[in-house]
Image 1 (tube, rainbow, N blue to C red):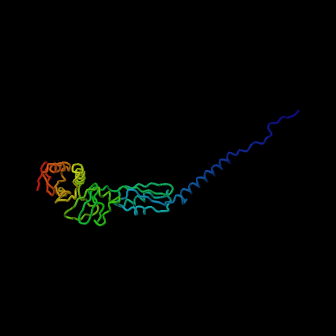
Image 2 (image 1 turned 135 degrees about the vertical axis):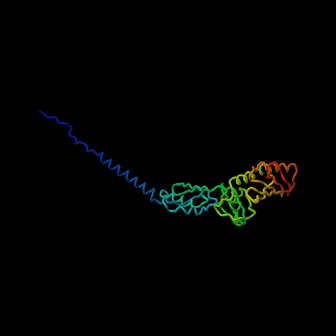
Image 3 (image 1 turned 90 degrees about the vertical axis):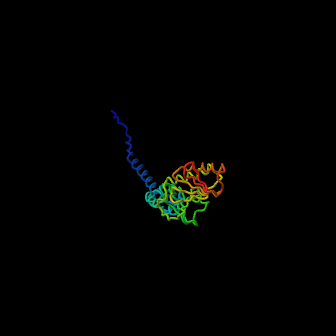
Length: 259
C-alpha cells in the first residue's frame, strides 16, 4: 500500500537576523558620514563674522574673538562671549550661527544719555551718569557716521571749570540726566524756533545756564521740572517782556529775574 508523505520542499532559511545586521551597518555608516560631514567638512568652517550693535566698541576687535576656519558647531560660544564682554562699553552679547559658515554677533552697549564737555574732551555718560566713552574734539565722529548721528541726538553740557573726568567715573545723577533731556524736549515743543546753543554748568550740578540762539542766557535749576521753566520763558518772549541777549533767572518757581 503506497505511503503518503508531507511537503518535500526544503524549509526557507530565516534571514531576518542578516537583514537586521545589514540595516544596522547602513544606519551606522550614514550616521558616521553625517558626523564627519558636520564636524570635519570644510563646508561648516567659519568664513564670515558679522557684528550688530557696535557703535562705541570696536567691530574689528569683536570679529577677532571668533577663530576663522573653526567648525561652526564646535565654536566655544561662551569663550567668545567672555572675550567680547571684557569691553566695559558692552552690556550683553548674543551669538547666532548662520549655516553653513556664518557667525553673527549682536552686542548691546551701555545706553548713552548725555555728552559732558570738559576741556578738549567730550565724555559720553550712560543712563546712570557714569562716563564710559571719550572723544577729543578733533576726533569727534562725523555727522554722517552712525555713531555721529547717535551722539548728535544727545544733550550736551559744558563744565566751565574743565575738571578732568575718568572713564567709569560717576559724573552726575540720573535726575540731572532726566532734567537735561526734558529741557531739550520742552524747548522743541514750546519754542521750536529757538535753538539751544549750549548748556553750561554753574557752581554745582543744580545750577544750569542755557545759552540760546537768540542770545538769551537763562539760569535754571535741575532740582525742578524743566517743562514749567520753558513755558515761563515762552510767556516772557510772547509778551515781549524780554528781548534778545537778555539774562533771565528762572530758578525760583513762578518768578523771573531779568537783567
